[in-house]
Image (tube, rainbow, N blue to C red; front, side, top):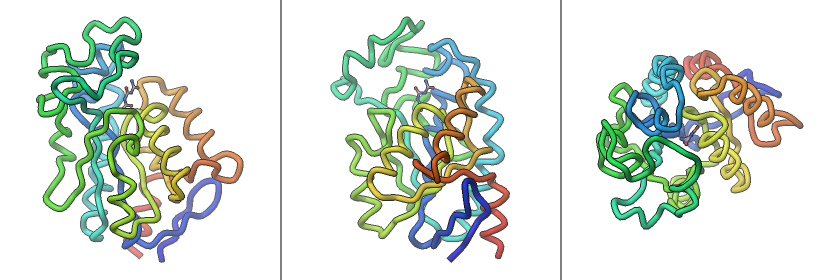
Length: 221
Ligand code: TIU
C-alpha cells in the first residue's frame, strides 16, 4: 500500500489495483491546427504540462502499473458524433472537417494521435471515446474491472472538460480517483483552478488532488 500527501487528505492506493489514466493528450488539443485551436483557444498553455506528464508516465511504467490513454475520437462517418456536438458554437472548423492535421477529432487522422512524448507502448490500453467522459460508450469500466482496478490516477486535458467529466464518471462507478494537478491544464487557468477545488471539496466529493512530486516520492518508497 502506498500513501501520498494529497488534498483534502491522504490518498492510499495499491499500485497493482491502480491505473494511470491519461486523458486526450492528442495533437488535436496540444498542437496548433487542431480542435483546440479551432475553438478559438491558445494551445501553448497545454504544452507546458508535457514534461511533468512524461515523468509520471515513465515512473508509472517502471513501477509496472496499468496505463490507459484516451483520445477524443469519432468514426470516419461521424455516426458516433451527435449533431448537437458537431453543430455547437461557431468554430472555424467543425468535427470531421479537414484541418491542417487531417480531419478534426476523427480516428486515424494525424491530429488524433497521442503526442510523441507520451505515445502508448505495447500492453497499454488506448480508448477512443466519442464523448467528453472516458466511460461513456467505451467499455472502459469493464476493462478496468477485469483487471481488478479500484483506484485511478488522472492527468491530461482539459481539466474542466474531459478530465473532470471522466473523474465524475469514475466516481459514480466506485473508483477512488486522484488528479495530478501539475499534469492537467485548461485553456482557461481560472477554470482549472475552480475544477481542482470543486473536485476535492466536501471531503473529496469527486476525488483527491496532489502534485506529481508526491506520487513520484511515494513510488520511490
Ligand atoms: N479533451 C477535452 O477536454 N475536450 C475538449 O473539448 N476540451 C475543451 O476544453 N474544449
